[in-house]
Length: 94
Image 1 (tube, rainbow, N blue to C red):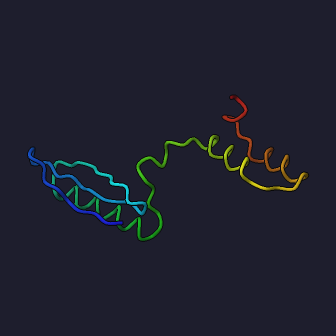
Image 2: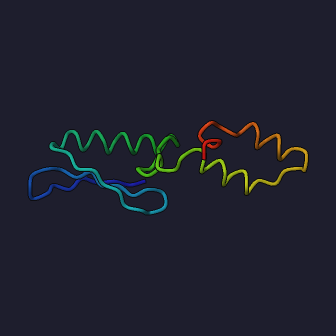
């Protein structure tokens, strides 16, 4: 992941970075110090493998679990047990 700072005409500072897929993300701050701290923390998290993209939390667990279970190859006897173990209250209410 790479990143840089941009000063806007309003004198605010934008921290801009590209993720591993090459997609551009940015966040604006009132000071250069805040923007630099944010950018450095994002770069460190990426280096450690702990970085989560801005849209990372938009997928609900139940939706993700449903896709994961559908794509998973299991034995005839294992499938129902796995589905029952992964069922959560939000999945049952739908």
